[in-house]
Image (cartoon, rainbow, N blue to C red; front, top):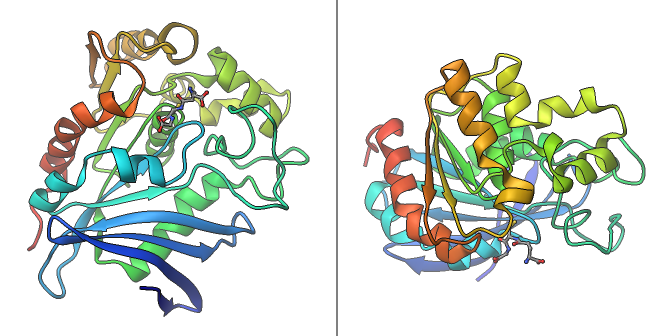
Length: 291
Ligand SMILES: N[C@@H](CCC(=O)N[C@@H](CS)C(=O)NCC(=O)O)C(=O)O
């Protein structure tokens, strides 16, 4: 079934829709003004009464991912249906033949790092901050039954970095913030140095607004924070460096529940194990659904 939904002059195409746990799991595409490309995202909407508006969780994915990874492997739908949470999963970069790319998995397509690129050849299409912070919320608010006063944000790895930095830069927008194995300080790890250097140029001061630890050091705060991190994650020591966030939160009095989980790795087996905890944690802070 393909449905064209037209609103406010924009067209969002429903590429697929499947009934699941009584709600609808859809995939949508639309032409993005921010990236200048078609963009795809998935949306789970629980069963709800006509006219009801439900709280929304934004889930930002990690390196190499599209909307599909968490949609297929995240195991979030049963509890989202029970708790009445809409779950939105965007893509991680612009896509298409005319979009600049790199052979490496950690730069270019699938690795947008949720920044607005300023450098060539990236700046034309790699405008993921503007897309995630502004364009997609406006589109979703206009088309789906979301209550934009009850938003939570989470993400995995590069997407955990995205969730933390977007929440820190937009105080008051998100009532709940969490992350799975986030990159807590891209300024201090090879993935981040490569991406921020490539997309933003050599001036490291320009990177700080894309670094959760730097934003907290510069005074930004979250309502509170839940993080789960596997202790058997291959990327923990070299890239994720969870201890930097733990120590900083303690130092500046930022409330945070940062949990190290013995034996768990970086995969969706880990995420799907703890996703229920995160959804309940968000639901507690987003209040009861009106349904
Ligand atoms: N082993 C991966 C490294 C990248 C990776 O682990 N990506 C994580 C996010 S940082 C992921 O979610 N991958 C997709 C999946 O597991 O479905 C590769 O080289 O492609």
